Image (tube, rainbow, N blue to C red):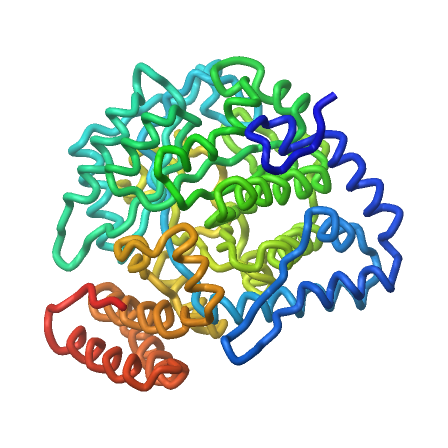
Length: 482
Protein backbone atom coordinates (compact mmCIF):
# COMPACT_ATOMS: atom_id res chain seq x y z
CA UNK A 1 0.00 0.00 0.00
CA UNK A 2 1.36 3.41 -1.00
CA UNK A 3 1.80 5.95 1.81
CA UNK A 4 0.52 9.49 1.31
CA UNK A 5 3.34 11.98 0.78
CA UNK A 6 2.62 15.31 -0.96
CA UNK A 7 6.36 15.84 -1.54
CA UNK A 8 6.81 12.51 -3.31
CA UNK A 9 7.37 12.37 -7.07
CA UNK A 10 5.36 9.14 -7.33
CA UNK A 11 1.78 9.61 -8.49
CA UNK A 12 0.27 7.04 -6.13
CA UNK A 13 1.90 8.74 -3.15
CA UNK A 14 0.97 12.39 -3.82
CA UNK A 15 -2.47 11.40 -5.19
CA UNK A 16 -3.04 8.72 -2.61
CA UNK A 17 -6.23 6.66 -2.86
CA UNK A 18 -6.36 5.80 0.84
CA UNK A 19 -5.91 9.47 1.80
CA UNK A 20 -8.75 10.50 -0.52
CA UNK A 21 -11.03 7.82 0.89
CA UNK A 22 -10.17 8.92 4.45
CA UNK A 23 -10.79 12.56 3.46
CA UNK A 24 -14.21 11.75 2.03
CA UNK A 25 -15.15 9.81 5.16
CA UNK A 26 -14.02 12.72 7.35
CA UNK A 27 -15.97 15.20 5.23
CA UNK A 28 -19.13 13.09 5.36
CA UNK A 29 -18.84 12.72 9.14
CA UNK A 30 -18.43 16.50 9.58
CA UNK A 31 -20.68 17.90 6.86
CA UNK A 32 -23.06 19.31 9.47
CA UNK A 33 -20.43 20.15 12.10
CA UNK A 34 -21.23 23.87 12.35
CA UNK A 35 -18.35 24.70 14.68
CA UNK A 36 -15.78 23.09 12.37
CA UNK A 37 -17.35 24.59 9.23
CA UNK A 38 -17.26 28.07 10.77
CA UNK A 39 -13.57 27.66 11.64
CA UNK A 40 -12.78 26.57 8.09
CA UNK A 41 -14.73 29.47 6.60
CA UNK A 42 -12.96 31.92 8.91
CA UNK A 43 -9.60 30.51 7.87
CA UNK A 44 -10.51 30.91 4.18
CA UNK A 45 -11.58 34.53 4.50
CA UNK A 46 -9.20 37.15 3.02
CA UNK A 47 -7.50 39.29 5.68
CA UNK A 48 -6.45 42.85 4.93
CA UNK A 49 -3.41 44.43 6.57
CA UNK A 50 -0.95 47.26 5.95
CA UNK A 51 0.81 45.20 3.26
CA UNK A 52 -2.34 44.40 1.33
CA UNK A 53 -4.39 41.25 1.61
CA UNK A 54 -3.53 37.68 2.53
CA UNK A 55 -5.34 34.37 2.35
CA UNK A 56 -4.46 31.17 4.16
CA UNK A 57 -6.14 28.83 1.68
CA UNK A 58 -7.47 25.44 2.71
CA UNK A 59 -6.17 21.88 2.77
CA UNK A 60 -7.86 19.27 0.62
CA UNK A 61 -9.50 17.86 3.74
CA UNK A 62 -10.83 21.21 4.97
CA UNK A 63 -12.17 22.09 1.52
CA UNK A 64 -13.79 18.66 1.25
CA UNK A 65 -15.75 19.35 4.43
CA UNK A 66 -17.14 22.50 2.84
CA UNK A 67 -17.99 20.65 -0.35
CA UNK A 68 -19.92 18.05 1.66
CA UNK A 69 -21.72 20.67 3.77
CA UNK A 70 -25.51 20.75 3.26
CA UNK A 71 -26.39 23.77 5.43
CA UNK A 72 -27.87 26.46 3.14
CA UNK A 73 -26.60 29.50 5.07
CA UNK A 74 -23.07 28.05 5.23
CA UNK A 75 -23.10 27.37 1.49
CA UNK A 76 -24.22 30.96 0.91
CA UNK A 77 -21.29 32.12 3.07
CA UNK A 78 -18.89 30.02 0.97
CA UNK A 79 -20.10 31.84 -2.14
CA UNK A 80 -19.66 35.23 -0.46
CA UNK A 81 -16.11 34.46 0.61
CA UNK A 82 -15.24 33.04 -2.82
CA UNK A 83 -16.29 36.32 -4.42
CA UNK A 84 -14.37 38.31 -1.79
CA UNK A 85 -11.21 36.33 -2.55
CA UNK A 86 -11.56 36.73 -6.29
CA UNK A 87 -12.03 40.49 -6.00
CA UNK A 88 -9.19 40.81 -3.48
CA UNK A 89 -6.57 39.20 -5.72
CA UNK A 90 -7.87 39.42 -9.28
CA UNK A 91 -10.19 42.39 -9.00
CA UNK A 92 -13.11 42.57 -11.41
CA UNK A 93 -11.00 41.60 -14.41
CA UNK A 94 -11.82 38.59 -16.57
CA UNK A 95 -9.15 37.39 -18.98
CA UNK A 96 -10.30 36.26 -22.44
CA UNK A 97 -8.80 33.56 -24.64
CA UNK A 98 -9.72 31.11 -27.40
CA UNK A 99 -8.75 27.50 -28.13
CA UNK A 100 -7.10 26.70 -31.45
CA UNK A 101 -7.40 23.09 -32.59
CA UNK A 102 -4.43 22.06 -34.73
CA UNK A 103 -5.17 18.38 -35.34
CA UNK A 104 -7.68 15.73 -34.31
CA UNK A 105 -5.48 12.77 -35.19
CA UNK A 106 -5.15 10.69 -32.03
CA UNK A 107 -3.94 7.20 -31.14
CA UNK A 108 -5.63 7.03 -27.74
CA UNK A 109 -8.87 5.24 -26.94
CA UNK A 110 -10.40 7.71 -24.47
CA UNK A 111 -14.06 6.70 -24.21
CA UNK A 112 -15.35 10.25 -23.51
CA UNK A 113 -13.62 11.98 -26.47
CA UNK A 114 -14.77 11.83 -30.12
CA UNK A 115 -11.15 11.93 -31.27
CA UNK A 116 -10.60 8.39 -29.96
CA UNK A 117 -8.78 6.17 -32.41
CA UNK A 118 -11.72 3.83 -33.11
CA UNK A 119 -14.05 6.61 -34.24
CA UNK A 120 -14.08 5.91 -37.99
CA UNK A 121 -16.72 8.41 -39.09
CA UNK A 122 -15.23 11.65 -37.77
CA UNK A 123 -13.14 13.39 -40.47
CA UNK A 124 -9.48 13.54 -39.50
CA UNK A 125 -7.73 16.81 -40.17
CA UNK A 126 -4.36 18.42 -39.48
CA UNK A 127 -3.74 22.07 -40.23
CA UNK A 128 -0.93 23.03 -42.59
CA UNK A 129 1.13 26.06 -41.61
CA UNK A 130 -0.81 28.16 -44.12
CA UNK A 131 -4.05 26.98 -42.52
CA UNK A 132 -2.66 27.79 -39.07
CA UNK A 133 -1.88 31.27 -40.34
CA UNK A 134 -5.43 31.66 -41.71
CA UNK A 135 -6.95 30.54 -38.40
CA UNK A 136 -4.77 32.99 -36.48
CA UNK A 137 -5.79 35.88 -38.75
CA UNK A 138 -9.44 34.98 -38.21
CA UNK A 139 -8.87 35.01 -34.44
CA UNK A 140 -6.95 38.29 -34.62
CA UNK A 141 -9.79 39.82 -36.62
CA UNK A 142 -12.07 39.04 -33.68
CA UNK A 143 -9.65 40.72 -31.26
CA UNK A 144 -8.04 37.74 -29.52
CA UNK A 145 -4.50 38.08 -28.13
CA UNK A 146 -4.22 34.78 -26.24
CA UNK A 147 -4.68 31.24 -27.55
CA UNK A 148 -4.65 27.75 -26.11
CA UNK A 149 -3.51 25.30 -28.77
CA UNK A 150 -4.94 21.79 -28.75
CA UNK A 151 -3.94 18.62 -30.59
CA UNK A 152 -4.62 14.91 -30.27
CA UNK A 153 -1.83 12.58 -29.23
CA UNK A 154 -0.31 11.07 -32.35
CA UNK A 155 3.49 10.72 -32.57
CA UNK A 156 3.32 10.36 -36.36
CA UNK A 157 0.90 13.16 -37.26
CA UNK A 158 1.42 15.51 -34.30
CA UNK A 159 5.06 15.16 -33.20
CA UNK A 160 6.60 17.85 -30.98
CA UNK A 161 8.27 19.33 -34.08
CA UNK A 162 4.83 20.02 -35.58
CA UNK A 163 3.63 21.70 -32.37
CA UNK A 164 6.77 23.85 -32.23
CA UNK A 165 6.39 24.84 -35.89
CA UNK A 166 2.78 25.87 -35.24
CA UNK A 167 3.81 27.99 -32.24
CA UNK A 168 6.46 29.71 -34.39
CA UNK A 169 3.85 30.37 -37.09
CA UNK A 170 1.31 31.75 -34.62
CA UNK A 171 3.77 34.20 -33.08
CA UNK A 172 4.88 35.24 -36.55
CA UNK A 173 1.47 36.38 -37.80
CA UNK A 174 1.17 40.19 -37.66
CA UNK A 175 -2.11 41.24 -39.25
CA UNK A 176 -3.29 44.86 -39.12
CA UNK A 177 -3.11 45.67 -35.39
CA UNK A 178 -3.45 42.02 -34.44
CA UNK A 179 -0.87 39.88 -32.67
CA UNK A 180 -1.17 36.71 -30.64
CA UNK A 181 0.94 37.64 -27.66
CA UNK A 182 0.67 34.43 -25.72
CA UNK A 183 0.27 30.79 -26.71
CA UNK A 184 -0.76 28.33 -24.03
CA UNK A 185 -0.32 24.66 -24.86
CA UNK A 186 -2.70 21.80 -24.10
CA UNK A 187 -1.07 18.67 -25.48
CA UNK A 188 -0.40 15.17 -24.20
CA UNK A 189 2.05 14.37 -21.43
CA UNK A 190 5.58 14.30 -22.79
CA UNK A 191 9.25 14.23 -21.82
CA UNK A 192 11.39 16.75 -19.92
CA UNK A 193 13.31 17.38 -23.14
CA UNK A 194 10.12 18.23 -25.03
CA UNK A 195 8.93 20.50 -22.23
CA UNK A 196 12.24 22.37 -22.52
CA UNK A 197 11.57 22.82 -26.23
CA UNK A 198 8.12 24.21 -25.49
CA UNK A 199 9.62 26.61 -22.94
CA UNK A 200 12.21 27.77 -25.46
CA UNK A 201 9.42 28.33 -28.01
CA UNK A 202 7.94 30.94 -25.65
CA UNK A 203 4.76 29.27 -24.47
CA UNK A 204 2.72 30.67 -21.61
CA UNK A 205 1.02 27.99 -19.52
CA UNK A 206 1.27 24.25 -20.10
CA UNK A 207 -2.18 22.78 -19.54
CA UNK A 208 -2.96 19.12 -19.01
CA UNK A 209 -6.26 17.84 -17.68
CA UNK A 210 -6.04 14.79 -15.48
CA UNK A 211 -9.58 13.79 -16.54
CA UNK A 212 -9.89 11.64 -13.38
CA UNK A 213 -7.65 11.04 -10.37
CA UNK A 214 -9.25 7.66 -9.63
CA UNK A 215 -6.61 5.30 -11.00
CA UNK A 216 -8.86 2.33 -11.70
CA UNK A 217 -11.43 4.52 -13.45
CA UNK A 218 -8.65 6.34 -15.31
CA UNK A 219 -7.35 3.09 -16.78
CA UNK A 220 -10.86 2.01 -17.79
CA UNK A 221 -11.59 5.38 -19.42
CA UNK A 222 -8.27 5.24 -21.30
CA UNK A 223 -8.19 1.57 -22.35
CA UNK A 224 -5.65 1.94 -25.18
CA UNK A 225 -2.87 4.24 -26.27
CA UNK A 226 -0.06 5.98 -24.38
CA UNK A 227 -2.54 7.94 -22.25
CA UNK A 228 -3.46 4.63 -20.54
CA UNK A 229 -0.34 5.07 -18.35
CA UNK A 230 -1.80 6.76 -15.26
CA UNK A 231 1.53 7.41 -13.54
CA UNK A 232 3.21 8.94 -16.59
CA UNK A 233 0.23 11.23 -17.17
CA UNK A 234 -0.19 12.25 -13.52
CA UNK A 235 3.52 13.01 -13.07
CA UNK A 236 3.65 15.19 -16.21
CA UNK A 237 3.55 18.52 -14.37
CA UNK A 238 6.70 17.61 -12.46
CA UNK A 239 8.49 16.92 -15.74
CA UNK A 240 7.15 20.18 -17.17
CA UNK A 241 8.51 22.13 -14.23
CA UNK A 242 11.82 20.28 -14.47
CA UNK A 243 11.87 21.40 -18.09
CA UNK A 244 11.58 25.04 -17.02
CA UNK A 245 7.85 25.63 -17.41
CA UNK A 246 6.79 27.29 -14.17
CA UNK A 247 3.18 28.05 -15.14
CA UNK A 248 1.09 24.88 -15.34
CA UNK A 249 -2.66 24.39 -15.50
CA UNK A 250 -4.61 21.56 -13.87
CA UNK A 251 -8.14 20.32 -14.42
CA UNK A 252 -10.42 17.30 -14.23
CA UNK A 253 -13.35 16.43 -16.46
CA UNK A 254 -16.21 16.51 -13.99
CA UNK A 255 -18.78 13.83 -14.64
CA UNK A 256 -16.40 10.95 -15.32
CA UNK A 257 -15.96 9.92 -11.68
CA UNK A 258 -17.48 10.87 -8.32
CA UNK A 259 -17.00 14.62 -8.06
CA UNK A 260 -15.98 14.60 -4.38
CA UNK A 261 -13.16 12.18 -5.18
CA UNK A 262 -11.99 14.32 -8.10
CA UNK A 263 -12.16 17.48 -6.02
CA UNK A 264 -9.91 16.04 -3.30
CA UNK A 265 -7.46 14.67 -5.87
CA UNK A 266 -7.28 18.00 -7.69
CA UNK A 267 -6.42 19.89 -4.51
CA UNK A 268 -3.88 17.23 -3.50
CA UNK A 269 -2.19 17.77 -6.87
CA UNK A 270 -2.04 21.51 -6.18
CA UNK A 271 -0.57 20.83 -2.73
CA UNK A 272 2.00 18.51 -4.29
CA UNK A 273 3.20 21.17 -6.73
CA UNK A 274 3.51 23.66 -3.89
CA UNK A 275 5.41 21.16 -1.74
CA UNK A 276 7.87 20.12 -4.44
CA UNK A 277 8.28 23.22 -6.61
CA UNK A 278 7.34 26.04 -4.25
CA UNK A 279 4.46 27.20 -6.44
CA UNK A 280 1.04 25.73 -7.10
CA UNK A 281 -0.84 25.60 -10.38
CA UNK A 282 -1.17 28.85 -12.32
CA UNK A 283 -4.68 27.86 -13.38
CA UNK A 284 -7.35 25.29 -12.63
CA UNK A 285 -10.03 24.53 -15.22
CA UNK A 286 -13.47 23.13 -14.42
CA UNK A 287 -14.90 21.42 -17.54
CA UNK A 288 -17.85 19.00 -17.49
CA UNK A 289 -18.52 16.09 -19.84
CA UNK A 290 -20.46 17.34 -22.87
CA UNK A 291 -22.18 15.74 -25.83
CA UNK A 292 -20.03 15.24 -28.94
CA UNK A 293 -19.80 13.05 -32.04
CA UNK A 294 -19.89 9.39 -30.93
CA UNK A 295 -20.11 10.48 -27.28
CA UNK A 296 -23.25 10.54 -25.16
CA UNK A 297 -22.66 12.14 -21.74
CA UNK A 298 -25.61 10.17 -20.37
CA UNK A 299 -23.43 7.06 -20.52
CA UNK A 300 -21.50 8.44 -17.57
CA UNK A 301 -23.42 8.14 -14.32
CA UNK A 302 -21.47 10.76 -12.35
CA UNK A 303 -22.93 13.90 -13.90
CA UNK A 304 -23.31 16.96 -11.68
CA UNK A 305 -26.04 19.59 -11.67
CA UNK A 306 -25.42 23.32 -11.99
CA UNK A 307 -25.68 24.04 -8.27
CA UNK A 308 -23.15 21.35 -7.37
CA UNK A 309 -20.90 22.64 -10.16
CA UNK A 310 -21.06 26.16 -8.71
CA UNK A 311 -20.28 24.83 -5.24
CA UNK A 312 -17.22 22.98 -6.56
CA UNK A 313 -15.89 26.18 -8.13
CA UNK A 314 -16.46 28.19 -4.96
CA UNK A 315 -14.67 25.60 -2.82
CA UNK A 316 -11.70 25.53 -5.22
CA UNK A 317 -11.48 29.31 -4.96
CA UNK A 318 -11.42 29.09 -1.14
CA UNK A 319 -8.77 26.36 -1.19
CA UNK A 320 -6.35 27.92 -3.72
CA UNK A 321 -7.01 31.67 -3.53
CA UNK A 322 -4.12 32.79 -5.74
CA UNK A 323 -4.78 30.40 -8.61
CA UNK A 324 -6.56 31.52 -11.79
CA UNK A 325 -9.77 29.65 -12.56
CA UNK A 326 -11.05 28.95 -16.07
CA UNK A 327 -14.47 28.13 -17.49
CA UNK A 328 -14.97 27.45 -21.18
CA UNK A 329 -17.77 27.77 -23.72
CA UNK A 330 -18.73 24.18 -22.87
CA UNK A 331 -21.03 25.93 -20.41
CA UNK A 332 -24.04 28.12 -21.14
CA UNK A 333 -24.19 31.87 -20.66
CA UNK A 334 -26.31 31.36 -17.55
CA UNK A 335 -23.87 28.94 -15.93
CA UNK A 336 -20.89 31.13 -16.82
CA UNK A 337 -22.63 34.15 -15.33
CA UNK A 338 -23.10 32.34 -12.02
CA UNK A 339 -19.54 31.03 -11.99
CA UNK A 340 -18.11 34.54 -12.43
CA UNK A 341 -19.56 35.32 -9.00
CA UNK A 342 -17.73 32.51 -7.21
CA UNK A 343 -14.16 32.90 -8.41
CA UNK A 344 -13.71 32.38 -12.16
CA UNK A 345 -11.01 34.67 -13.57
CA UNK A 346 -10.67 33.48 -17.19
CA UNK A 347 -13.25 32.63 -19.87
CA UNK A 348 -13.03 31.62 -23.50
CA UNK A 349 -14.99 33.58 -26.08
CA UNK A 350 -16.35 32.75 -29.54
CA UNK A 351 -14.67 29.34 -29.32
CA UNK A 352 -14.73 26.77 -32.08
CA UNK A 353 -13.64 23.30 -31.03
CA UNK A 354 -13.16 21.93 -34.53
CA UNK A 355 -9.98 21.79 -36.59
CA UNK A 356 -10.01 24.76 -38.96
CA UNK A 357 -13.28 26.08 -37.53
CA UNK A 358 -12.46 29.79 -37.36
CA UNK A 359 -12.10 30.23 -41.11
CA UNK A 360 -15.52 28.69 -41.77
CA UNK A 361 -18.51 31.04 -42.05
CA UNK A 362 -20.86 28.53 -40.51
CA UNK A 363 -19.84 26.83 -37.27
CA UNK A 364 -18.59 23.37 -38.35
CA UNK A 365 -19.67 20.42 -36.23
CA UNK A 366 -18.16 17.41 -37.97
CA UNK A 367 -14.78 17.71 -36.22
CA UNK A 368 -15.89 19.32 -32.94
CA UNK A 369 -14.38 17.87 -29.79
CA UNK A 370 -17.50 18.81 -27.82
CA UNK A 371 -20.68 20.84 -28.12
CA UNK A 372 -20.23 24.57 -27.54
CA UNK A 373 -23.08 25.84 -25.37
CA UNK A 374 -22.16 29.54 -25.39
CA UNK A 375 -22.05 30.45 -29.09
CA UNK A 376 -21.96 34.23 -28.78
CA UNK A 377 -19.45 36.34 -30.73
CA UNK A 378 -16.45 37.77 -28.92
CA UNK A 379 -18.01 41.23 -29.10
CA UNK A 380 -21.14 39.90 -27.43
CA UNK A 381 -19.06 38.25 -24.69
CA UNK A 382 -17.07 41.46 -24.12
CA UNK A 383 -20.31 43.46 -23.87
CA UNK A 384 -21.84 40.87 -21.50
CA UNK A 385 -18.83 41.00 -19.19
CA UNK A 386 -19.03 44.78 -18.96
CA UNK A 387 -22.76 44.60 -18.27
CA UNK A 388 -21.88 42.26 -15.40
CA UNK A 389 -19.37 44.76 -13.97
CA UNK A 390 -16.28 42.90 -15.18
CA UNK A 391 -13.39 44.33 -17.15
CA UNK A 392 -12.67 42.19 -20.24
CA UNK A 393 -8.89 41.80 -20.28
CA UNK A 394 -6.68 40.76 -23.18
CA UNK A 395 -3.53 41.27 -21.11
CA UNK A 396 -0.48 39.03 -21.57
CA UNK A 397 2.06 41.33 -19.92
CA UNK A 398 3.20 39.15 -17.01
CA UNK A 399 4.35 36.33 -19.25
CA UNK A 400 6.40 38.58 -21.49
CA UNK A 401 7.82 40.48 -18.52
CA UNK A 402 8.94 37.27 -16.80
CA UNK A 403 6.36 37.50 -14.03
CA UNK A 404 5.58 33.79 -14.02
CA UNK A 405 5.56 31.01 -11.45
CA UNK A 406 6.45 32.20 -7.96
CA UNK A 407 7.11 35.74 -9.24
CA UNK A 408 3.50 36.09 -10.35
CA UNK A 409 2.24 34.57 -7.11
CA UNK A 410 4.37 37.05 -5.10
CA UNK A 411 2.86 39.91 -7.09
CA UNK A 412 -0.63 38.55 -6.47
CA UNK A 413 -0.05 38.08 -2.75
CA UNK A 414 1.48 41.55 -2.33
CA UNK A 415 -1.64 43.30 -3.56
CA UNK A 416 0.37 45.15 -6.23
CA UNK A 417 -1.60 43.36 -8.92
CA UNK A 418 -4.02 46.33 -8.87
CA UNK A 419 -1.18 48.59 -10.03
CA UNK A 420 -0.18 46.15 -12.74
CA UNK A 421 -2.94 43.92 -14.06
CA UNK A 422 -5.72 46.48 -13.62
CA UNK A 423 -4.17 49.16 -15.87
CA UNK A 424 -3.00 46.50 -18.30
CA UNK A 425 -6.57 45.23 -18.57
CA UNK A 426 -7.85 48.73 -19.30
CA UNK A 427 -5.20 49.38 -21.94
CA UNK A 428 -5.86 46.09 -23.74
CA UNK A 429 -9.58 46.74 -23.55
CA UNK A 430 -8.95 50.10 -25.23
CA UNK A 431 -7.08 48.29 -28.00
CA UNK A 432 -10.05 46.01 -28.50
CA UNK A 433 -12.49 48.91 -28.54
CA UNK A 434 -10.49 50.80 -31.16
CA UNK A 435 -9.75 47.89 -33.47
CA UNK A 436 -12.62 45.41 -33.21
CA UNK A 437 -15.62 46.52 -31.15
CA UNK A 438 -19.10 47.34 -32.38
CA UNK A 439 -20.15 50.98 -31.84
CA UNK A 440 -22.36 50.02 -28.90
CA UNK A 441 -19.60 48.00 -27.21
CA UNK A 442 -17.08 50.78 -27.87
CA UNK A 443 -19.25 53.38 -26.17
CA UNK A 444 -19.90 51.09 -23.22
CA UNK A 445 -16.22 50.19 -22.96
CA UNK A 446 -14.86 53.71 -22.78
CA UNK A 447 -17.41 54.57 -20.12
CA UNK A 448 -16.12 51.62 -18.09
CA UNK A 449 -12.49 52.64 -18.63
CA UNK A 450 -13.24 56.17 -17.38
CA UNK A 451 -14.74 54.72 -14.19
CA UNK A 452 -12.13 52.03 -13.62
CA UNK A 453 -9.09 54.31 -14.01
CA UNK A 454 -10.04 55.79 -10.63
CA UNK A 455 -9.56 52.34 -9.05
CA UNK A 456 -5.82 52.23 -9.81
CA UNK A 457 -4.18 52.82 -6.39
CA UNK A 458 -0.96 54.47 -7.63
CA UNK A 459 -1.42 58.02 -8.86
CA UNK A 460 1.62 57.72 -11.13
CA UNK A 461 0.45 54.43 -12.65
CA UNK A 462 -2.99 55.92 -13.19
CA UNK A 463 -1.52 58.94 -14.99
CA UNK A 464 0.64 56.79 -17.28
CA UNK A 465 -2.30 54.49 -18.04
CA UNK A 466 -4.45 57.47 -19.01
CA UNK A 467 -1.70 58.76 -21.32
CA UNK A 468 -1.29 55.34 -22.93
CA UNK A 469 -5.03 54.93 -23.49
CA UNK A 470 -5.12 58.34 -25.11
CA UNK A 471 -2.25 57.27 -27.40
CA UNK A 472 -4.17 54.11 -28.33
CA UNK A 473 -7.19 56.21 -29.25
CA UNK A 474 -5.35 58.90 -31.18
CA UNK A 475 -2.68 56.87 -33.00
CA UNK A 476 -1.84 53.38 -34.16
CA UNK A 477 0.38 52.74 -31.12
CA UNK A 478 -0.37 49.46 -29.32
CA UNK A 479 0.99 47.06 -26.71
CA UNK A 480 1.59 49.34 -23.74
CA UNK A 481 2.12 47.45 -20.53
CA UNK A 482 3.26 47.70 -16.96
